Amino acid sequence: MRSGDEYAQDLARQEAVAKRLEALWNCQMVKTAELSKIDYVATREGQMIGLVEVKGRLIPSTMYQQTTLDSAKLGWMRLAADMYGVPALVVIQWTDKAAYFEPKSTPVDQVSDQATRVGDFPKAQAYIDRDRCTHLWDGDVVGAS
Image 1 (cartoon, rainbow, N blue to C red):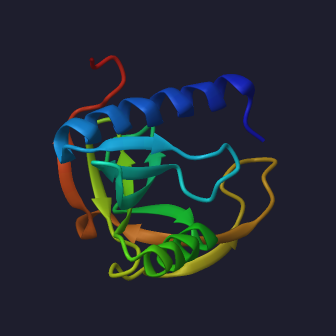
Image 2: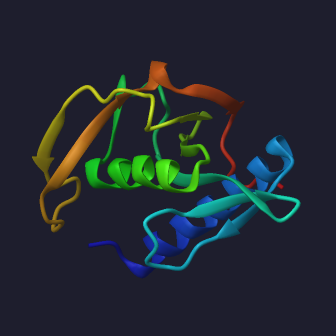
């Protein structure tokens, strides 16, 4: 289980990524409810233009070729993209860069039922190759203004 400090750091990282995306994509990132399956709704002129899930990794992108994501989360992203008729994107912020992929069109390599942290319950994990992600920016958002 995550501590309160870890959760607060995750939220701060998400907010920093959202601010960077707003500037990059000329949109407003609206945070969804706390227990929502998706982190943000991207809007422009009051219209939904996309759905965004932000994943933080406290390692450089080059440490592992693949990164794990909750398989059910990817399923929700695909379903939401179809339901709302907008792109659904997963943005991954590593310590050295950020990139994104679209779950609807990006294949996952394999799925396993492993706990990702000590004390977590096992859940289906998808493995996404970092080379299938589209580059957004270099560097980390932590400490950036």
